[in-house]
Amino acid sequence: MEARTRVGQIPAEPDRDFASRNGHRRAISFSLLFVLCLLFVLWLPRAQTASADGGAPDLAYVAGTAPGVTVIDVARQHVSRTLSIDGDPHTILLSSDGRFLYTTQPAQERVSVLDAASGKTQCSIPIPGRPTLLALAPFDETLYVAGNDNTHVRAIDPSTCKLQQTFSTPGLVSGLAVAILTTVFPKSPGYQLVVATTKTLSVFDSSGKSLMNIPLPAEPQYLSFPPGSNPAGNRPRC
Image (tube, rainbow, N blue to C red; front, side, top):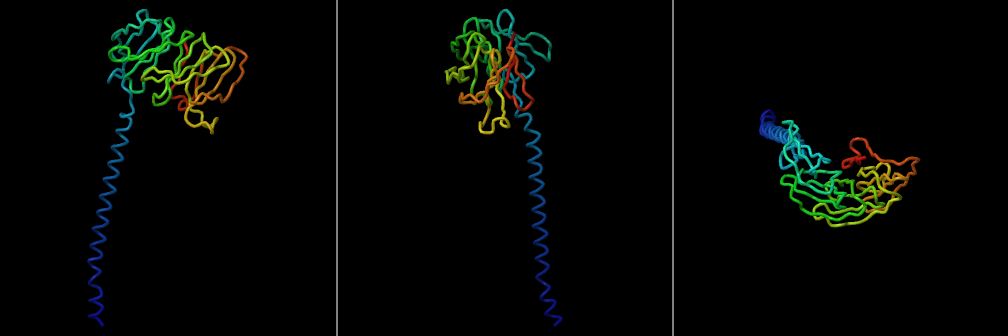
């Protein structure tokens, strides 16, 4: 009986060794996974940072100067250069990666897309109504354009300046923004276009469907949204 007991106990030793080795492998795997996750978290903010003008995040683009658009090096606190843009540029926007500059040219009734580094025009499109307002959709998929002398908002392809669609508004446009209002419009996926006119505050979905018109007693001119709900809005110039 004692011999049988000893024989029965012999296989237990390899089982314990196998379990120990298996547990050791699991510990190494979890450690490697933790390190990879940590590296990803540290890398993510840098990957999401947009660098204007091909790697210079400290540049500011200012419209309203006589020659066109002035580029200011904020870190060095001096004017870096000037982009010669005619047509009295008003609202200007940078693409999410900082490669392109979108500018209104109301005096020429035109909107142009420029290479932010060289200042060369990539494409242009005529827009009636003295366009002064811009709003950029998430992921730069659509550029919205409007002017104070027109009752329409036009959606253009920012890479080709091709007209995609035109929205009719209740009045002359004085403010323009893109917002994500999923809690207000749960049946409207994606983002919404918010337009201030001389009569109302209007909301459209990305296809141009009117979602809401709120009459206002005075002429609205400015739009503002809480952080996180307005990824691509702008404030019109008075």
